[in-house]
Image (cartoon, rainbow, N blue to C red):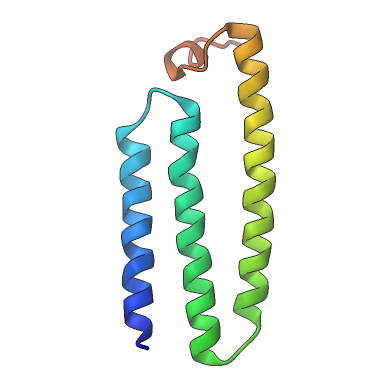
Length: 100
């Protein structure tokens, strides 16, 4: 198959992730989901270029990005839970008032 199809697919995912961040600025978990989709697009690019150039480096970078995405999700979820326990909400407007 043609790598252009996969690159077009990852470009669409990346643009929708950017659009999701710009349009959803009210709830933090909803803001973090487009970031994960952009990381998925980066992984797709790494894998496509790895297969097309017959090199294993792109696949190893893709596994590294997946590991970082998993760690980011776990830390972000912990921050959401702590913020919800302290503030009672995870709305972005209330977090903007944090001083210190």
